[in-house]
Amino acid sequence: MPRVNRRDILADAEVQVFHVVNRCVRRTHLCGRDPLSKKDYSHRREWVRQRLEFLAGVFAVEVLSYAVMSNHLHVVVRTRPDVVGAWSDDDIARRWWNLFPKRRGGVEGVAEPTADELQQIRNSTGGVREKRRRLSNLSWFMKCLCEPIAKRANHEDEVRGHFWESRYKAQPLLDEMAIAACMAYVDLNPVRAGIAESPETSNFTGVQARIQDRQLNRGEHSDDAHKSRLEEGPRAGWLSPVELARGEEHVPEQQSARRSSSKGCLGMTLDQYLQLLDWTGRQWRPGKTGVISPALQPILERLDCTVESWLDLVSNFRRRFRTEAGRQESLVGVSTLRRMCRAGSRG
Image (cartoon, rainbow, N blue to C red; front, side, top):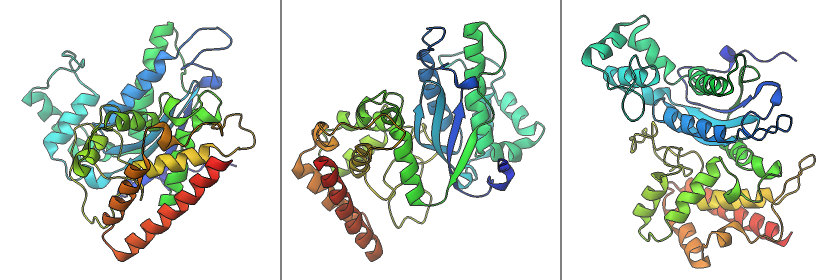
C-alpha cells in the first residue's frame, strides 16, 4: 500500500499531534552497541536527546514524549502555528539565526547576531512569513533534528552516506485517547524491547525525565510550587506538561525559554499517567519479550508516594476541572485508573 503524501496530513494552519518514527539505515544499531562490529555508539542517544531539547526551545513544535532506542527514534510532537503566530519578527529572526547561524562562537557554539545580521534574515528570500511557517512545520523540525545527527555521526565514523533509513514516518493522533495511548507506547518502548525493567529505568525516554524531576520535587508541599517545579524541572522542563487544564480558552503564556508554551496534553496529572503506564506495562503483549515484573511494587509506591499524598492529589485534581462535565470526567477517570491499577497489582 503506498504511503500517504505528507501534504494530505500536514496542515500548516492547524494544531496537530503526530507520532513520528525514524530508523537508522538498515536498522543497524548506530545509536547503541552494534552486534556485528561490536562497537558501542550509545553516546549518540544523548546527542539526539540534547538536539530535541534545543529544538523544543526554538520551534513552535512541542515534544510530548520521546524514546531514543539503539536503532530507531520515537517522538510524539504537537505543532503550534497559533503560538508562532504571536511571535514578533525579531523573535523569528533570532530563532532562525540559532538554527542556521552564520558565525560560530560562545558557550553554545552560536555567536550573538548583530542587528544587521538579523535584518538580513528578515529581508532574505522568503522573508519572515516563510520562516514563521517553517518554525511550526513538522518536516522542518525533523530536518533540523536528523540532519545534524547524521553529519555528526558520519564525521565520527569518517564515512559518508545515509545515517537514517529513509524519510520519517508520521502518524496523526486525532483525539486525547490516541495521544495517551501513543505516549504510553513510546514511554514503554524500552520495557517492551526487554532492555529496561520499568519506566524509571528506561533511559532516554520522556517518562524517565519526568520521574527524575518528580523525585527531586518530593519535598515540596505547596500545590502551586509543586506543579511549577514539575513543569520547569531540570530534566523534563523542555517537554510539554502532562496535565491539560480544562476550560482554558486562551493559549497559555510561555513560562520557559525551553519550550514554546506550557500547555499540557492529557486530562490527567503526572501521577495518574504514571499509574496508568505502570498498569499497561504489566500486561503481556504478544510478540514482545518485555513486561514489568508482577513482583515489582506499583510505581507510586516505588517512587515513595504515600496513600495520603495520592488521595490529596486526587482531591486537588477535581478542583482543577472548571465545568460540571469536567468534574464528572475526572471522577470517572480516577475510578477507572484505580480499578486498572488494582487489577495490575494482582496479576
